[in-house]
Image (cartoon, rainbow over all chains, first blue to last red; front, side):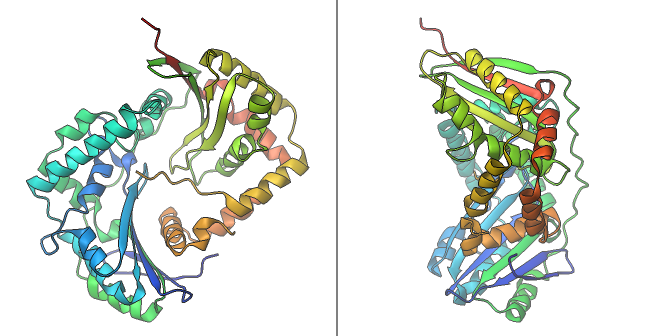
Length: 356
Length: 67
């Protein structure tokens, strides 16, 4: 357990403080409860685009990054389907500057035409480079579109298509900011060489006056229960074929999610994983193979994916995967092997966060 | 747990914020303990429920036919 104390401001901001005096550093992590699951079709990629805009200055501070760098700090952020998370690492002695800057951009963001257009181009460029001009780069676009028919997990956080991002105008961005970037939609965590009472006083000082946001009730469309296998072929100029087979699993906090997570580890985590043994070492169709779950709030996916050896089709590989999984279902994993995997997980399993 | 995330200060701060968002920072420990206690039978059961063809979607990412 990570030791911490917490409190909530009247405006709803949830604050956690974790003291660690072993170094001179402090971290300010500010999580907003908004991600691509809060988007709607035709307006996708907005949460991630907005993450970029949060760095483009406020009415008081022309540039967020350089203000942090001036006090010896570093900052960055990521957006995934569920959250947008901003973080700053800096010398603990300068903590106050970080709190000031975060409080400042929570209410005074400068949404001018220039940064709106600049960041739009940056995001579109990122879309092209990482998802369109990269072999297999759009695979998750296809996977999500096939696996989800209604729920916003139907598109990746970068957005469904570039046109969606191109179309956003200033009014929509302002509305999104007011709707989501509010103290009652955020969690602030401060860690490092800090003193709880002092931090508490400074958080009150900087954040107390920020008004509560008028949050709309978040109604997210439930994905209908799937009633049969779905298949789609995608053609692209790639050296070898690839297979993506995904299965619907419960959401992060639901029953059986952790079991599905563990199943994906048994199948795909580490060198001695089941699929590595059966499909890579003892067969010649797969060049590689991975298995993992998307750790989403809403019901998500267990993904099994691999690239084929040259000349092997994805259909052939699927047939072999299917028969391997049939055996996996029939023959229980040995207690001893399960224990081995658990021991490895204790040492080094990263959590599922998908940075953009 | 000696993961990178729990070792690095930034990782710990992120994790705390994330679990507060999930609704309970105690979940961090509870989830891990729960996961470590999952039995062979539970795996077997969930495998047949979830690794089910009717719940599957498949993308065949194929080489474009040569001109």
